[in-house]
Image (tube, rainbow, N blue to C red; front, side, top):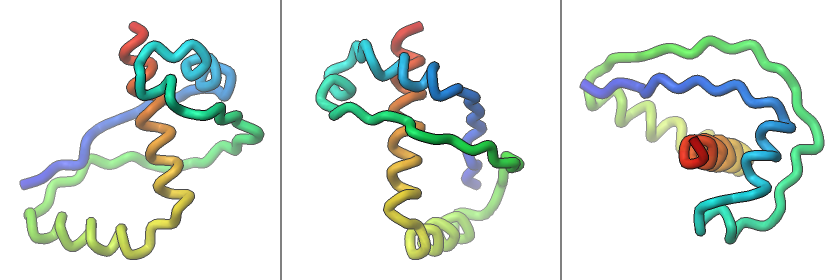
Length: 89
């Protein structure tokens, strides 16, 4: 059985920009400057799911078929911010 990871993070744009400015890891130093020019609040519910491996694989396949470039950018930035914050603690 595969479970979706539980992750929560609430950053303001100032916190996000501050965490990227003095990047301490080589990977973050190689990134060009990315500025947050706007933000909007979205209401959503995070769920921890449990399912059979075949079901998980099917959902991943479907998600890859409909994911946009913007989805991938959001995932990469979120992961980078989490990594940057955790490495600065």
